[in-house]
Image (cartoon, rainbow, N blue to C red):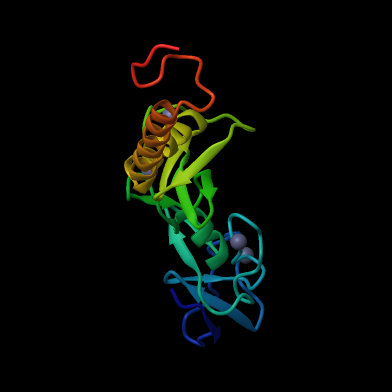
Length: 182
Ligand SMILES: [Zn+2]
Ligand SMILES: [Zn+2]
Ligand SMILES: [Zn+2]
Ligand SMILES: [Zn+2]
């Protein structure tokens, strides 16, 4: 919405200010929303800044006249919630984790739905929020499922091998070796 600064039109009589309902006797007036305003009366409902000075745009919504900053703060969006992928209105409280933003109600462990309190630890794993418990469980699982299982197998195999060598050679064994009696 553009704000225009105009000289009073000679044939329009004395215009009334849409803000204070008083006549505008000043030489300059502002025209916005198809109404006339004192320069001092066209203000942001939120922060009271004079809109005639803040650039030349104003925003209206639900009978509010707002400066751009307040409009964006109130009706703009913060971004997409990383959990539900819906937009987050700018005035809503959000949770931030690294580069992600979340609705407050969406900020929960995506495994067990545990809600976090202030001071709780959470983890971001593959862009999912996890509570400490689920994160650790997943880490264990992840380690098991990757090459460390193979590693464990190899290790187990080595242990088995060395034991059989041991038993056959009999070094350090208190048990009968290779079936021979002492
Ligand atoms: Zn006024
Ligand atoms: Zn404002
Ligand atoms: Zn969400
Ligand atoms: Zn959890």
